[in-house]
Image (cartoon, rainbow, N blue to C red):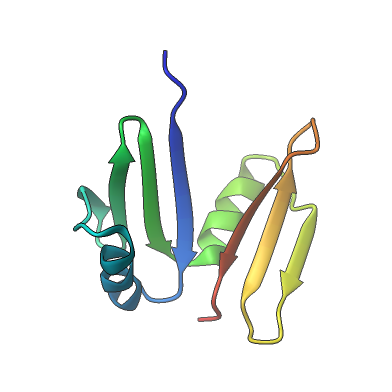
Length: 98
């Protein structure tokens, strides 16, 4: 089985973010799983998605038994929530305030 990447970016406003990502990535989303999520297939087995609400993403991870190792709020209000795997690799999610 090939290695796959499915990376997500929580956004404050799906309606505002989607056109920006269309311009960034140069194409319309490949599909829409629901009303506030868009997915781009960047290459075979390589996808990026945007969806609303950082809190929903973090809450779902916590419900699966993982706690953030670090939470930051920058001067502009953007939040970053980080998790570390058993090897110390960091995976972070960020988003603008609602």
